[in-house]
Image 1 (cartoon, rainbow over the protein chains, first blue to last red):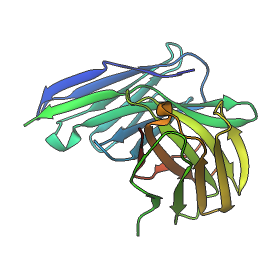
Image 2 (cartoon, each protein chain N blue to C red):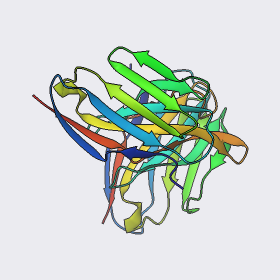
Image 3 (cartoon, chains in turn cyan, red):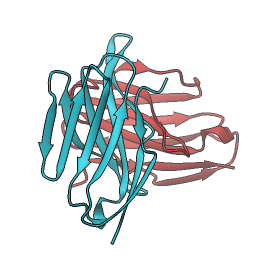
Image 4 (tube, rainbow over the protein chains, first blue to last red):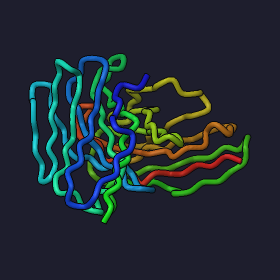
Length: 113
Length: 114
């Protein structure tokens, strides 16, 4: 079953604005990852945050994790047209004897020039 | 010097046919995956191999059979294709067993079954 749910499903902003995407999940996790997918391309890893971490930064990206609320957020500051893509959260949990990533349905971000 | 490559990029075929998708990674990773992405962009894992050994086999029809001839290759063979198999199939790899490491994705194979 689907583990992560992104919110909103679609987001449209002007270049230079900040974009915030949220992810909620249902069961305990080991870590949470964010990926970007440009149209017609494969997913690209953005950032990994472990369950004992609360915040992580990478360039213009800031990810927070609240395990008590089972939620994470991805903030992209000073957005650019090139940030237009789908953004997915993925949670790491056990499936049988192996850990696997379970992806959410994604947020489609459109940055208008 | 593509990290994870897949062939073909597009595959159009008729119902009932058998087809294969090939995947190769040059990252030296131990673990490889196949994912299926549907028309709503929902991405679901199908299989995972670690050191050529199958470690994750999600609820997938047995018409789908993965094969890993070596650590760098993971192919997907699909028998008796059905309309519902139409999707984008992604190969991915990671340094270690899934979930603990970032995954590197191939460009995808868009399969259309008519």
